[in-house]
Image (cartoon, rainbow, N blue to C red; front, top):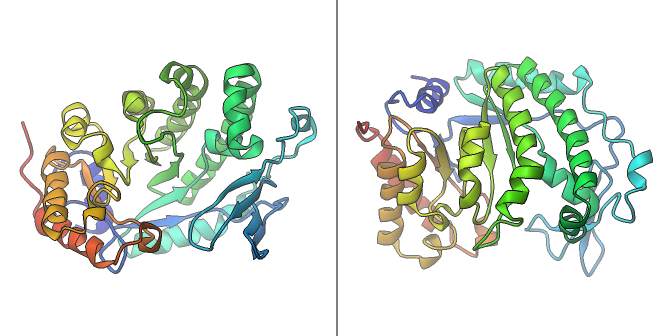
Length: 335
């Protein structure tokens, strides 16, 4: 089987010859990604070192800052942070032009010839909205002005739905997005609030992707256990977690085995940080054998910044070798 066939077979829980690989650091990866070109009215400016901090402006016009050149940083000032009235005259990035997707289409065709599974990268409403208003302000909006929040989310979702269809026209196999929805012990908003304000966007965008035969891959950090069932029912197919042990591997297997895939490195906080080779290998084996034992369900991952973790790459190398050792051949299917 090609890489693309292995991933598709796993997503169908149909027993691929090995687990899919989504690793880095020189280890195998069955996946490739493509994105549209910047919008013609993009406000983006690159990261610039201003001495005490780095600063950049994103496509929407939000100003970001960070203290060094390793981490992603955070929005320092949102483009409509100073008042909702700014939304009345705000011009969203124009992302519907087919010409913005020509390169993505060519790259997708190239990757398919090489046998890879291709993900088209797209935004998601919560992230876009919270950047535009800045996180602290937006979370207050959720409580105080839910109708304004709902309107902003819908405007963004409608734009992203068109982007999903453009990526489908490029021939991608799935879409990749993500939003960090949790702290270490809870969701950023009450689960009922999530379901009222945000879940409709998940349903809309997952529905658009599925209508074109695309799987939906979604990254999130933090404790999002309370809404995983909502995500599954909305149409998320793959959850990319860097801290899968935050939810409990047994819990994920028991409640979502055969329904969701989990794409993860060995947990970047609870296990990799122990720097214990035996514990790291045991964790990798547990993920494969518990999450991947439904004819599919687990995708081997790799955290992209060892520097941010403060770890020697050798610890992720232990994990990746273990993923390959125990995931090829894949464990027998349950039931």
